[in-house]
Length: 402
Image (cartoon, rainbow, N blue to C red; front, side):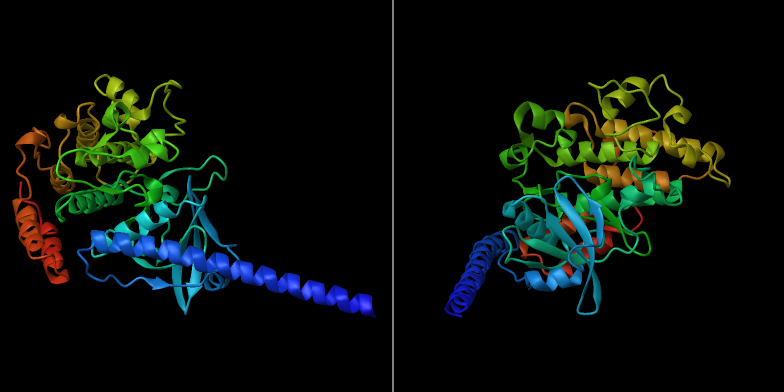
């Protein structure tokens, strides 16, 4: 009897000690993550409050049914569908204990959340070693699922038509233009790919994955944090590889690669239709082949098989987008266009009809969106109120005159 009492007492003490240790770990993580989040929010948002809710680890565990509803597993993150307080949400967990990446992601998402093509953050859990993030739900999932056939599952939705792909490209270009021009220090996204873009119920694209984003002075800046976290070679541009420097043109290069993937319908890391040397890349292959290849050899067969009145008009559009992608992925950053130029050119391509309008021309001769930059600059001098940011958005969404 005495032995049983002693065993029970020992077990009770051990369980209580474990609970206390867990509580202590959670509190320590909360304060460490919370102070980091607060510091970066204040630094990036001109001391203006941004509503970010906090959730407990238990709430998110219940919301995802013990994280059983995984939607996508990326290189660093896992995305889950969840339900919080009657609202469907997306929940993002990082693979490793890298709180700086999670905080960076949340801070830049919050800073950009006024834009219609950025995935809006709702809150986070700071009680875990690496913060867990909560975002608005995107009903139509990841763009990658709509463009690629994944080798493991061979799963593919109805192929996305070219008109929709082109519109999404223009909207993402517009979002990147906003990042580059609407703030005193340009924001470089650094990680543009199909799995960084989600689609709402109307197929409106939402840019996400700001974990490697940086805010830089005008010109170039060191990005040692980017190079030190796993070195994601796919996203290292020539200037990053050579000097460890990033500018707005870094995003332009990665957007050019993104355009190529939209065109060919395959992941640059897993090309099956084109014969690319193991030591080469999709960008290098297209640059080497573009002059001697027919557009039909490169483009996704699903696009070429579309019904309707495509014909010469479609071919001109495809060629124009290929030419734009090649310009975006030039080795020398100085010869690449700005994202504002890219947005304007994509608008021109969208508006192209069979009337014989030429889509060629030198991108350097295109006028920039002076109205966007002027409004953004004026707003920033007055600390950028939400109403002023909306004005910038409205101006930049007007039809672009060519």
